[in-house]
Length: 209
Image (cartoon, rainbow, N blue to C red; front, side):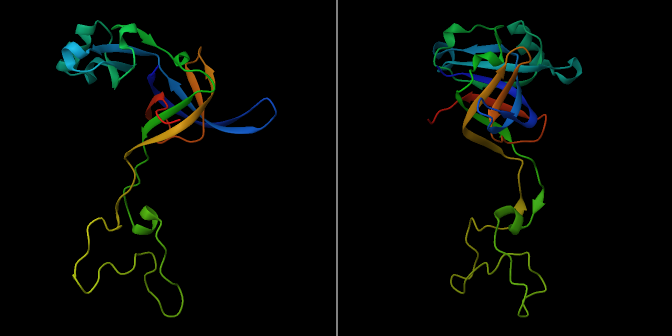
């Protein structure tokens, strides 16, 4: 069965397994999330549930949002995400989804927004080679080499150049759930996930095994 939840990245740490091996993990505060809307194939053309995470202040909620949450009869939430599940009939508006929907040993996919690094050069952005530092090459070294050719005398599209780096949605696949703390709504997954601390992430069970 497909599962999903919204969480907040807490940070990285390490834990030890039964034989003493060190496992680097990322701790995620997953939920509790409330079902704010339920979509059906009859009304919307597909089955899905919309989850809400973190209570929102009234001053930060506009009129359409207030009406949306009032219709569902739930408190306003700051973050909403729609998940398409195998069986949405088991969930109803107002139901609470917690971290224990996942189990230790499962594989999950985690989606987040990477850290924004602003406008960067091609060396940092694309990991290109630097120009030579000897034999009279210079005075600039941290730039890409020749961009075009004599014929057709222009730069082709998709050339790796300087520009905006980071601040994009990235999904990391097949991360192993190492530990679940249902009381504190914490999920520890092996490895790193996108984004900075306190960044919002979306967790779903793995689509590629």
